[in-house]
Amino acid sequence: MLDPLIPRLQAWIFAKDPQGRAVAEGNDVVVHFSLLGAPQQLRIQYVPTNSWTLLYTATCPDAKERWFLESKWVWFPEHGGAKRVKLPPLDDRYKLYASDEAFFGAVFSGRGLQDLFHRFEEGDHVKASLQDGALKVAFKVRFNPRFTNREAVLANWAEVVYVLGGLTFKGVQLAVMTRI
Image 1 (cartoon, rainbow, N blue to C red):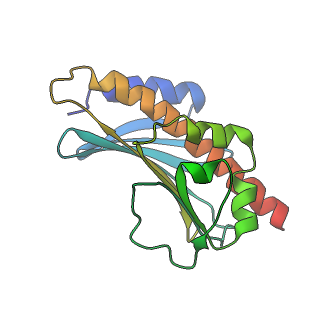
Image 2 (tube, rainbow, N blue to C red):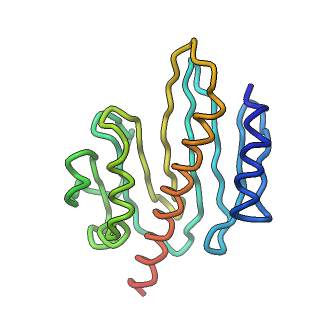
């Protein structure tokens, strides 16, 4: 289904990480790469009907804290070990939960990361979490069934989620280092 997207993503990730690769895994396209010395991936999954989820994942083994960020209208099933927190200006667009409010604030202290989260439209389905050392950033793209250039749009959104995930990963790493 997304076969034309693979060579495009392969060329794109190779320019950023010569060891990076884009492969098909079932109906998904998965981009494997290393950023700041840690293996990471970006998965593009088809969600019936006419939707795709772009999911960035990375492992942060030294991060024991938990936090959740979700669009106001998205619902995470649970926020175990976390309480509602406020962090202007993010809390006007997102629901925020954290086990350690200071750590959460340190992750999102950079204006670039907050600005990137604010570039999404209010109705967009965006969520991010750090739980049990696993960092996840997800964005859902919906298409009109008659739309024909999905690969180009998905490639553009893949780059946005890559940057967003990378900045969030960097924020977690810096928060962990300042905590020690």
